[in-house]
Amino acid sequence: MFKLRTYYPPDFSADRFRNCPDAVLKEAPADGVAPFDYHSMSIFPEYFKCGGEWLLACESRMDCCAVYRDRAVHVVEFRNLKKGDLVFTGRTEDGSEGIYVYPDGFRETRANADVFAFRGNRTRETAFSKDYDEIYDLLRHEKDHGKIVWVMGPAFAFDKDARTAMEKMIRAGYVHAILAGNALATHDLEAAWLGTALGQDIYTTVSYPNGHYNHLDLINRVRYYGSVRRFIEAEHIDNGIIYSCEKCGVPYVLGGSIRDDGPLPPVFANVYEAQDAMRNEIRSATTVIGMATMLHSIATGNMTPSYRVLPDGTVRQVYFYYVDVAEFTVNKLADRGSLSARGIVTNVQDFIVNLANGLNL
Image (spheres, rainbow, N blue to C red):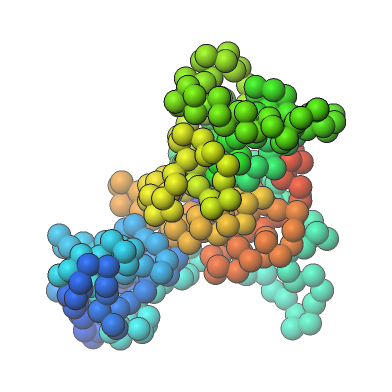
C-alpha cells in the first residue's frame, strides 16, 4: 500500500532561527525588472522571515522571484513582476538573511555506497523493475488523492499499442492533464482519422502512397472545422489520445514550436502563453511523468517544485519521472536537483504498454 512520506518542517524555535533577522524587501524598479540583489527560488521548500514569522512559499517555481503580498509569499516569474512589487532580496540560504532553503523535509534515505562503485548513474543497464512497482503503487494512490500530469512527445502516436495503452490510462482515471506539442496531437489525430502517422501505418509501419500529405491534410481538416472537438464529431473519430481526452474531459495543453506545421487550432503560438497554460496545470500537480520529449519535460521540470502545499496546509512530496530511450536526456532532467526526479531508460512505447498491463487495464 502506497504511503506518502511525512514532511518534517524546520524547528524555528531553535536559536539559529530565532536570532535571524527579517528578510529584506525591496521594490521592483520597473515592470518585469527585479531589484539587483533579488533572491532566486529553488525547487525546495523555502521559508521567509517577515515580522518575526517564518512563512513558507506555498506555491513555488525555480528561477523566479519571491514577492511579499497580502501577508504571504508569492512566487512570480520575472516577466510578471510589476513596478513596486515587494521582492525578497538576499543570496544566502541558511536563514542568516531571513531566507531558509530546506531540502531535507521528507527525510529521503540515501543508499550507502563505497567511494568506488559500479553503475552509479541510471543507464540502459540499470534494473528498473523496482521503479515500475513503485509507479504502479504511486499511480493507484494519485488516481484519487493527487493530480497526475503527463508530458508527452509524439513517439506515442507512431505505435498502435502505445496509443491504445494511453487511451486505457485516460479512461481509467490515471491521467489528469497532458502537456505536449503540436506534433503529438497532429500524429495522434492522423492515426485516428487515417490509420497513419506521418503517412506510415501505425501497426505495419508501411508507408502509404502520398503519405507525406497525411499530417498536413489532418491539420487542414481540423482547421476547416475550427476545433478539435468539431473535427472529432464531424469525422466520427472514435479512438486515440486526444479523442479520449475530449471524451473524458481531460485538459491538454499544446505548446507551439518554431518548426510546427499548421498548427492545430488549440496550439499556443505564443511561447509565454503556452508557459502560463502549462504552469496552470502544474500548480496543483503531485506526480509528473515526462516521456520522450526533452524540451517540454525540462520546461515542465523547471515549473515543478519538489513539494506541494495542500488546501489543508499539509506539505507533501511531488514525484517526477522521465522516460526516454536516450540516457543523456534522462540524466539531464534528473540533474535538475530534485530528490524525487527519477529517470527510466527505455522505449516509451514499451513503457506505457507495460504500465497499462501492470495496472491491469
